[in-house]
Length: 363
Image (tube, rainbow, N blue to C red; front, side, top):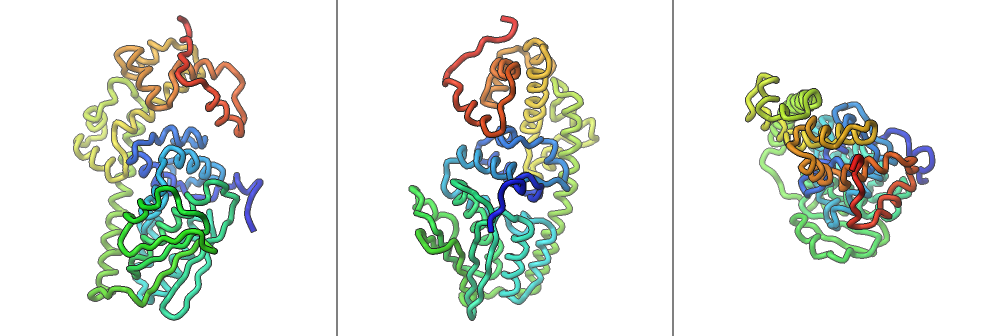
């Protein structure tokens, strides 16, 4: 039975997955600010480890990212980044499981709880395991994208015990099917099948030397990585705080590092470990302030530019358009008309004529 209606607005998905997804899209040249704005997700939510997204927010975020990525394999590759560490610290316990059928079953049960977009059903026949995906929500045209996130994550997790995978899809082969050949060794893709499922022949598993020792080593190493990641995330939050307090010309890496009692190199390293860059954080915060001033005040564009550290209005306007896809004048003008409803927002953006140059306030 598929969920719909009011269930779309119930917080279900850990913000951890949104952070991971935004890092992935940023690596492919897509602004996380734009993706968050389209989904109406407050960027500040990313700093709250206990926050959850609604299914409506998540699907809107994925839908817009899918349109911008324009890559049939992107969601599978994102799924491959959702390994044990990607799903959270609890996943490390799986490494200590030496019964491989039980391990795969634990993977499935863990995914069902932590990422409840699709449901999964597991069947074991001898040394062969099949994992079948079931739709839990009306995903529409986003269904292949979400399916491949699951397929990629299953591949990353089950690679601990399996070297050959057959991925079956119940929809036609994408136009660029040849690109699927580069997703990893031992992967076979089949389309127009009866179900969406993964076949895992454990009988072909390559033995490792002293599996228990390797598993314990990996668990310890990744736990240390997680601890280091927690410390780095604290630095990210501190950097955000300093930039928000002074988003103008004082918001340089050197000055922020000095306020934190750290070297610029150390700050840069912590940000990198958490998947961020200083310039990206600064641009995100400047965009937030700029939009507030444009929408909620009549402050002249020259003054906004000066407050945010730009030498002139033209530089600010160019930067703002790069962040949001709109000029400051467009945003200020649109703020003076009644805001569009959720369903009509995307349509209204699409109806803005290409190349239109809006008049600037006060000119």
